[in-house]
Image 1 (cartoon, rainbow, N blue to C red):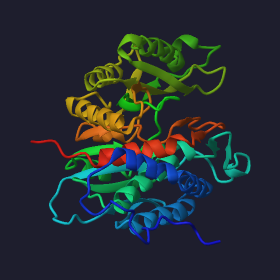
Image 2: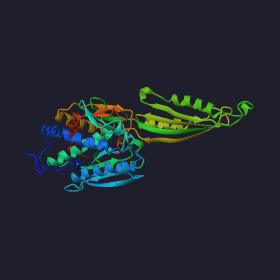
Image 3: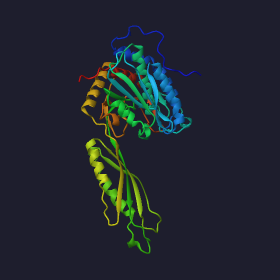
Length: 405
């Protein structure tokens, strides 16, 4: 069967000549008539399973997305990642050149292993499209493609040139894509992140926690636990004390969480443990809190003689804070939603995204993707009726003029 691809129309809709104004009611109606096409494309993309670290599997969806973008007038290119997990960048030349840009940011990798579709079939049930990766975040990619298609078909030229980056390693930390994300965000007027919306009401995400990862290594002195226990110093005992200190850093009111997720250590039951290791994750709402917590963790001191501590790691994803630039972009989203007759709200969430990298560099708005539930869970789904609405909102944001400098 021939793949269904987004193509420009044979004839342009009436009243949509190049340079015509954005008409919210007309645009929302256009998206409503494309609901079935959006569902069809999302089902196709979901069946192209694309787990992180599987370059061969990711190749199919990357090529498909590149083809969709090229059909919309973009030049698409692969950016090398690790083990064939390449990222996709797409740009289009503006008529005049030298105009500001706006970055559309998404990812094609999912947490689901190959074969998940066999027990999590891609199907529509009771107005919900179920399947691995449909919510996080292939639904957002479909909405993005249709928003770009709508502007093209209606002869609307965005005042800021759209640049698309779809990375292949977001679910595992964006290690190879981070430099490219930062490089494209730094000169951009704004960054629109196609991650899923928050909650059943589809709130946009205007703040995210930053995430730090640390390893604490405790070295003690081994001895025979029965014959000469006083000759040794237990690394496990010391680690238990350090864990108490770590958990004391938690501050719910400030949104600070410090969690010791795994511990390992010791040799045998009859040996005083010479080594113990803990893996720690910390999440914070502000850059100032990140600095404070990182100093506290890296500054841990032994509580016993002959014990040594070593801490590695840090805050790799900064918080996405409600900066003034981000607040102005949020207000523009509110205005666009009002013109479209759509309810809209905002949320602060504990999870991180690539928007954490871009927020210190450019105005960033997250959660513009699908409305649904079940990210990383067996009940993952998107609400079908919300897809045209979210695509219309994105189209309206793409048409927002740049701020005066």
